[in-house]
Length: 253
Image (cartoon, rainbow, N blue to C red; front, side):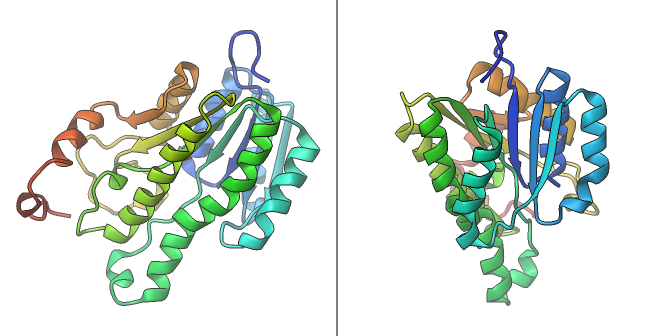
């Protein structure tokens, strides 16, 4: 459970190679988080990160295999992980793919892979996660969404639709868990400078993984339901959300 100062003591990350997730874990370890479990398709990719987290003060760092698209394995994965480590103060769902919009428009398989990874995979693993979090009676479940979830743009509507589904699912889940001791937080970053966006033209108010991580940690401390990163995007999206469609479609990619 959280310590006397409300600091997260244990965290499970699904999508451990996410630069935002790793920056968040580093920030949490700096604030006395001691147990870290990073779930990723290929654990060997994170051996250096494992060592760095131990050096930073984490007492337990475990790398475990996890495939967002292997739906049949999710329930067993959750039970085995919780049985091995006990309670988790925080579970962060950070896996996802941007995909290639141009390819998705002509290749149904690619479009479906984006949606299945970002939305269906998240729903599949969240159901057993919630069962365990309900049973322990406490904890936070954070979903890494996107401002793209607010209103799908023509330039990335497949990715935007997948994040919109995840965002709506997380919001409804949070309302259903009210009073259970389990808190749900949705994180909506804007353009983030990562390997996934390398080579792309930055959008206004572009940010970094470390800045998003600080917003996530602050949001957890306040028990926020929604975190915008940077915060100004809340106002920006409030305007864009209500633009007439004829105007909105003229916004360049």
